Length: 236
Image (tube, rainbow, N blue to C red; front, side, top):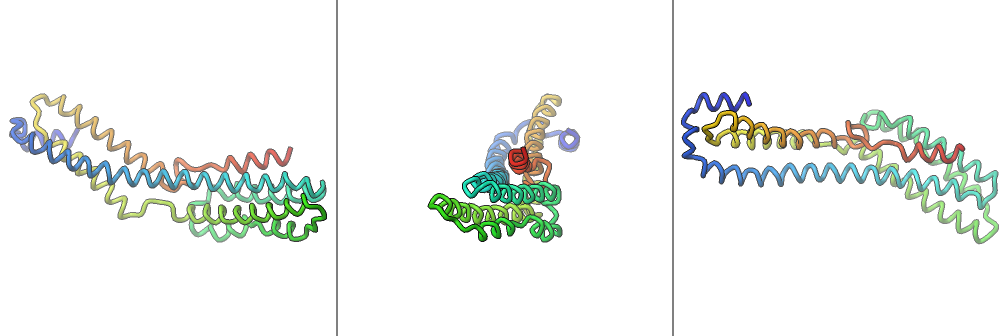
């Protein structure tokens, strides 16, 4: 509104509305470009967010099925499997707030290791077809869980909007607002109301970009609820 007031004061001839046809055409073209550019960025950020959440849930529930399926090996083996999964999930939960800190990823990767589960499966000597099938399936699920863990840690350090794209988003937002200010209207307050509506819409887009930045450690982050759920289920 301040910028609109300044433009109306500096260029009083805008009120004559002779340029509105040209300005309307240009703002339509710029609006489409803005919508495509910013919409693509927001859509990509949303995809990163949903992918990070999906990988986290797959990792947590794959390990839960391994632990619970260990009943086929007997109560002793199942208890060891459950303890290993619980310790791993607790390490993930503990390290979650630092996921966005690239310097911490090395330490977190060491703490969030699945080596104990691999060692347990390597020690199993199946004696029945059902036990052999369980060990084969558990080994595959554990391999997939490792891939999900690496994907999660990778996204924790890299899934954010780069600085050139931030400049692009802010610049495009400023241009669309500026062109909207150049329309001529006799009613000052109607003009202020219209530009305020456009500014609020642009602000919503910028807010979405901020909220979806850093999906594992940002303002709107993927929470470790899946890991907490597995810990609760296995420690009852």
